[in-house]
Image (cartoon, rainbow, N blue to C red; front, side, top):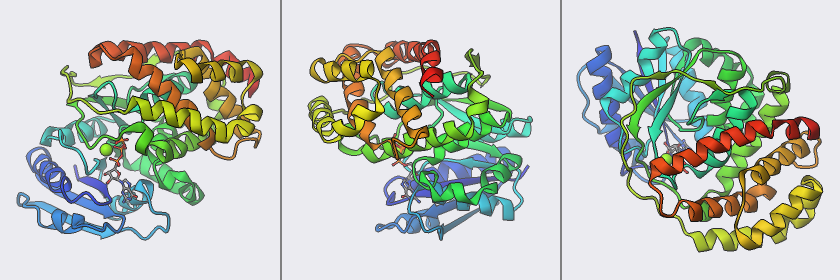
Length: 380
Ligand SMILES: Nc1nc2c(ncn2[C@@H]2O[C@H](COP(=O)(O)OP(=O)(O)OP(=O)(O)O)[C@@H](O)[C@H]2O)c(=O)[nH]1
Ligand SMILES: [Mg+2]
């Protein structure tokens, strides 16, 4: 089986060589070699040199290029990595992020082997710190679960295994790559497209995810906008798929998840609260049109108390999706303050919990989203 590992990058000189090394070792050990390809966004540091200077075992080829697609972003890098995979006629493409610190050679096997066994899409399953992945936990996971009925815990984990059949689908619509799919919308696009087109999906158990985490209020606003905007766009595209789904189905897991407590991730709670209130004021006029009267009332209260329950949160996203469909909302930006407020609520509630305990709250959230789905259908 010919396996390629694709690594998108932008200014990752400190971490990418480790990722290349682990990937190359995995290719050698489990597949007797392969190719590692880096698609870079024109890094200002020595990312590409770091890639090309990495010592790898014989039988593994390492390449690096700057992608040509004119939109700077992670998605553009992944698009061109898929094009390389197609030219090289590989059987499996494994994507891994360039800031991973917990990747081992086994990860490559765990992403590629299920494809050989007949799966088309391998999503990662790892333990993350309770305050890492706030866009996953607040939006991507519960929305994917309630809409498409698949219990995929990390729909935007960033690391994936994909089959050639699926690559053809991803590349079949050039226009989609002119949207935020070319940026951080790419992960939700890959996952949703696989599920909505009924490809065989599985999760692969990887242990801990340790990477360069981000403080939500300081740097996750644009990412929220790109992920949620893409999610809404896909809701319009796949409304016939998700409308009839009322149950949450378990998705098989490859291997066994080793539990542990990951390194702490820092979140500045005061900044989340401040930014939530400031940005709400800036967006109040549009939010009055987007949110139902009841949701708006709930949100105004939540911005004072920072108590933001899951029912209210599901209504915010469902109102947002319906407004997007009707053209009232052009992108997800006005919802950023509410994501900050919801995140602040979660930080407070889980202050004294382990990451495993916090996990229970997130699983319950998916159930709430599913129960509230009739609200979405009514507003849609
Ligand atoms: N080529 C390219 N790669 C990018 C760009 N932005 C991010 N990436 C890569 O995409 C991967 C994920 O980016 P991160 O910034 O780690 O984002 P993340 O881990 O999904 O998000 P957090 O969970 O919030 O940290 C990394 O390999 C980055 O190097 C970009 O503009 N161009
Ligand atoms: Mg990262």
